[in-house]
Image (cartoon, rainbow, N blue to C red; front, top):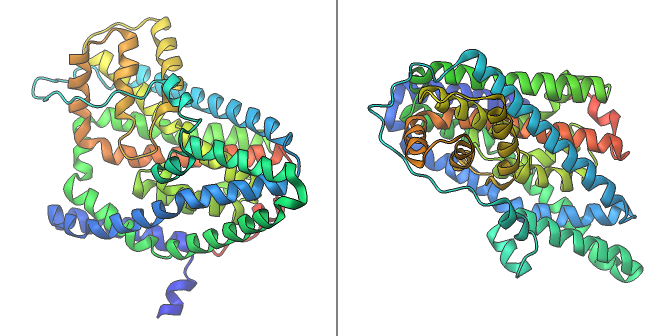
Length: 415
C-alpha cells in the first residue's frame, strides 16, 4: 500500500487531497478547524527551509555562472518582465470590472468597518534591501535583503578565484542538501493540503462568495485570462515557442501548493524544485528570479486590488475618468512591490490604491470589512496566479540567458 501511494504522481495526490478536503470541510463545518494544525505544520515545514534554500542556492548559482557581469543582464530582464506582467494583470482586472460592474447595487449598510495595516512605502521597501545585520535578516526572512547579501557573497567568491573554492563547494553541497529536504517535505503536502482546504471550507465555505458573486466571477475570469493569455499564450507560446500545456503540466505542483497555502513565500521551495526538475530552468535562474518574484511579482494580487478598487468606486457612486484608471494601474503596479508574500497581504494595498481615486479612509474601511469574510478563497486563487507568473517569467529569463534545458521541459513526467 505504501509503495502504491508513492507511485501515484505527486500532483494527483495533492489535487485529490484538495478536492477531498473541500468536501470534508463543507460536511464537517466549523469542526474541521480541529485539524487545521496539520496544515499549519506543513506550512511551517516549508517555511523552515525557505531562507537556507534561497541563500545557499543563490550563492551556488552565482558561482556556477562564472561571470558576475551576467548578473546585470539577468536583473534588468527579470525586473522589466515582472513589471510588464503586473501591469498586464491590473489592466485585465480593470477591464473586467468596468464590463461586469460588480459594485453596482451593493449595500454596505450592514458592514462593520475593518481597518488594516497600511502598505509599506516603496522607498522604505527599497531601503530595506541593504541590511543593517545580515544575520538578522536571515533570521527575519527579509527576502530582498537575503538576495542582496547572497549576491555579494557569490560575486566575492567568483572574484577571489581558487581561494574561494572550499566555500563554493560547501554552498553547492548545501544546495543539494536543501533540495533533498524539500523533496521529503513535499511528500507531506497531500496531508497538509487536505487539512488547510478542509479548515477553510468548513469555517468560511464557498457560500460566502455568493454575497459578492460578480466580484468573485470577475476575479476568477481575470485570473484565468491572465494565466492562459499573458503567460501561456503570449510568453510561453508566442515568445518562447514552447508548449503551454507542457509548461502548466510542469508548474502544477507549485500552483496547487500555492492555492492551498495562499502564500508565495511558503510555496517558494516547491517553485524552485519544479523549476529545475520539471521546467528545465537551471539553478542560477531558479535561485535568483523565483525568490525575487515571490517578493515583488504579484500578478494575481494586482489584478484583485484593481478589481476591488473599481468595485468600491461603483458601490459608492464615484465616477471614474480614464485618468483615474491610469492612476489605479500605476499605483497598484508600484505598491505591489511592497506586498508581503503571506495570506491576505493584498488587503494592505487597498487603502493605498483607493486613496488615489479620492476615497476616504472611512469608505475604504467599510469596503475591507465587506470583502474580508470571503477574502481567503480568492486569496488562494490569486496566489496560484502569482506562482504561475513567477515560473513563466523564470522560464523566459532562462531562455534568454541560455540557462534553459529544453529536454527537461519536454520530458515525460509521471502522469
